[in-house]
Image 1 (tube, rainbow, N blue to C red):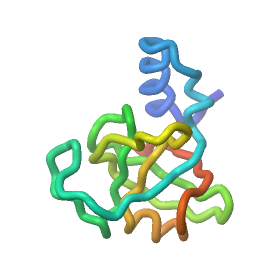
Image 2: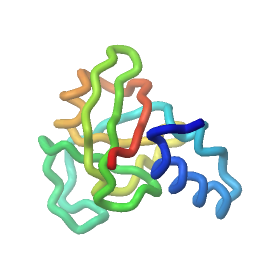
Image 3: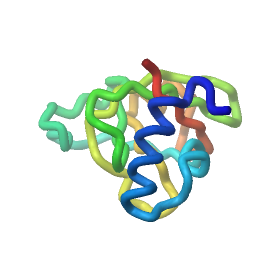
Image 4: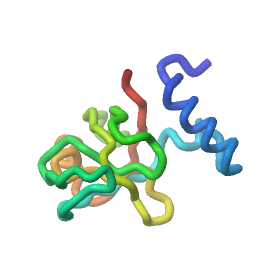
Length: 116
């Protein structure tokens, strides 16, 4: 039973069914990267490198996601306001501020959970 993953599973379940992609369980953890420059996000906001925001390929703008660094156990809640990452194998692209909160240097293995 996926208690606490309801909204996350529902979003990914619909997307997986529509696109023939992998199951929601496979989309809950993977590699995260971060980016520190940009002018505007895909949502139209001005990019704030120190903000607690992130880019995700399919979650709706405004969705709040708890990102946990699986190596250290540190976590941060970010708001999705951009699209990406566009590098194969990565599931989320964090702002510099979000990456700093997780103690990231480059890329790291994370788990994602949508927060209500």
